[in-house]
Length: 421
Ligand code: AMP
Ligand code: GLY
Image (cartoon, rainbow, N blue to C red; front, side, top):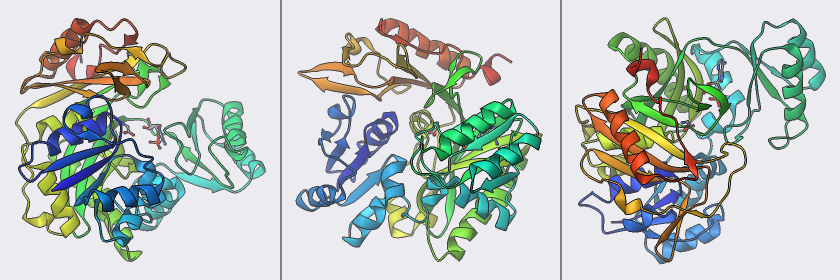
């Protein structure tokens, strides 16, 4: 089969790596891909948000399946566009993607189907929001409704900063806004829970915990993710059942009652408090870096799984996992998540060990004349799988030190809540 993967991050490199192992694969394209995917696929420079150009590519290269990595094309309706042309696509359609595309859409589902989540209010004017904030308990969480590349969430310690967040949102910091979401601050520990669905049924696709803050001890600014480990230390049978029954099943029921179906990965972002789940957010794709962390544990053929989702027969598939744990550390450009230098060379990449337990997935990299350059804030994902997360972390740190890239930094404490407790 001829497959095209949309996206250029670590998540897409990890997906490409799995797909490249499938006996069903004939040719793999990454649109646009990165310096890592170049070794296992053909990178094609194409604007994936220009659907007409994308459609032409898919026709011309006779692509059998398109796999969508990031959320934006999904929310923009790339699945509907390609399906209308008769092309198989792995990912949810435009309406179902509102689970990530609109936080208010999801909150309304939570309200109607009694899904546990933070208490919330939706406000249509600055004045009403400010008035509410005067009396509300702090800390409090203010959120822009739409996609904001991970930046539209403000955790506010006092009334003034919460009012400022409301002002920024209404003043268009994340695009035109006529509503703002204000919610209760949930205390607890976060967990990323994944499922895969064919529109009829869903199956669990492992768990992880990521570290979003830039500095050790989970301090400092929010980032796209500095590292993760899998499975989450929080998961147990009782919690698993609660997540499925009280969060995921009612969500799929809501989608069905809208007359829609959901095909693809669903990322369930949860806060766990006293072994009870509260929904924080949905993402309509795999997590990044959770995807890079989880996929090396997979023992099944990912391409077959994805195809079964497009064909409505996930029921016949068994998802098998290695009986191991996984840990991923992200090597970032100095300065990230603020400003950082671009186009700096990363020499000595050939020094990195590659075997059945050590993986390296590129994120913000580009290859020019056989040299690799850093082009993004998050640059390389180092992953190790073993029986012991501590051992994996030591091994990953050794690899990063071995590379010795002077323009980067990373967190040495990924997994500390479970490893160092
Ligand atoms: P979101 O984009 O909604 O996932 O929010 C980004 C991050 O903000 C989450 O991963 C949490 O760490 C934090 N967050 C969001 N909503 C809440 C909440 N109600 N209580 C506590 N933390 C939250
Ligand atoms: N790891 C967080 C995300 O993918 O949104």
